[in-house]
Image (cartoon, rainbow, N blue to C red; front, side, top):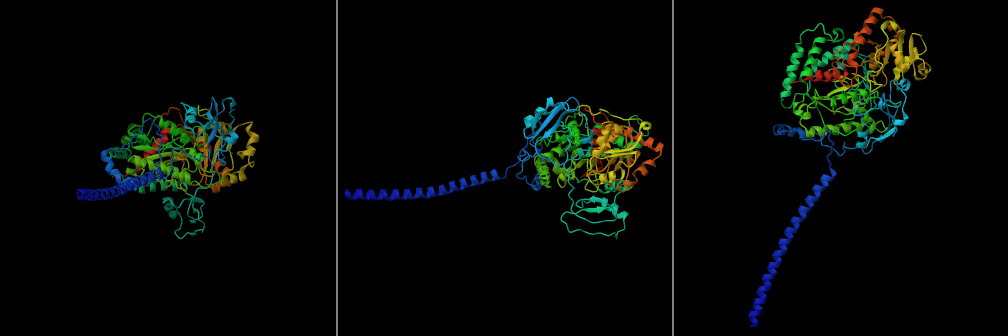
Length: 630
């Protein structure tokens, strides 16, 4: 019996040991699997935590992707080629330099900045320091936080949008960054050599091919080329139109056929000799302009991206020297005729950002480093090109922007320079692409509540002042102007800031313009100046002294009929040039100013052929003319 029990014990022990060993092997296998699974989950969490995708606050209540099943396969290769979205999010600006602003409100100007937290370098404000005679109502002063969207919503006026009254330190300035220095001929124009511009071809035709050239060893250099005359700039426009075309769409769209039809219609536009609203002498080709404008009204549809966070996006400025971009943004976003909610129906895509708010929010004063501004726009493009197929379909050629700050050329370089850029800095020497980019008039609206306040001036025969200028000494040219003409001739009312204060109490800036035959518009740090639009506003013939500056709507308007262009080197002969213009010729110039004035005026509700529609038409015309079908 004992032997039997011993055998049973031995058998049971052996079976138990086998079962235990089997369980151990099974547990070890499962344990290893569990460890692998847990490690994989940890790695995924680490990657998601490290590589955060930027998020956006939609401009409209809902935001959805418009990539259809048919388009998804076409867009996959573009998404794989698109630059990855980095860690910098454009949802918020954690290191905003301008964190709070104090606003004042009055019946004429609406909201206006009177105090800004954070130091900004000096801005070029054409005449704010000497011309703002409007009183401030200190009872209506209140603060606003630029980092807090809810407060920005509180200060937004339902009729006029967000208003900034031009202050006396309202502009950042430093020379545009350029990369190569080569001397061609004896000119003085700065050209960004990184742009393959046809300007160099025009210049090489003008000068001998053996012209002396040299390259400086500096890291940041400048290309110095000859000044283009008006006829040579016209030649440049024609050459660019003949040679430059947008990227072919990566896949076809029904929208493309509509653009091609419009292009053919414009080319064979019927001859129009008389029009009750247009004046043929002011246009290069009034018939083409009229037909193109009609087709724009009939055909054009625009989609505005919902992405982007205020104040850099979707926040218009209406009362500063950069108000052109703000007024266009305000009127575009509230438009019902051209906007569509379905981007698949759009011919053009508007990217609504403020170059002024971009600079004020992200630039570190005195750092001379604007990389963060460009990166911010790059992140924006990364997002819309990843979420939607439309940017990748055309390489951004059917996208457009309106920006008036001096740095807009730099900010959009490489990222948006294949798009249609409506820019105040329309200098062909530093990257403005004549024939594709659009010249944006720099307007200073003194009364955003009433943008037509004080419109007009004295008749041609009641303007006793030959020439007038008053302003700050930004750039070298203005110092030269004052050196030759300040207090030198009673017919030449040329003032610096200090000398103008002595006479402003008797006759202010606007009154001087209203009583002058010619208003001098010299370049400052850049070629553009709000004086050009101011001159037209007050019916004073503008005298443009800014080499290689392509005036607004250059591709359509005949500027020789209502302005005088003087090369910078001829400043010492300024009075001689103006006095040589016969009275009859001056009468025709001044009449031209009065006729073209309607094209340079803002209205709260846009009217036909006004400034809003002229800007939009130039963008439309650029897209149609440069379109290249698949």
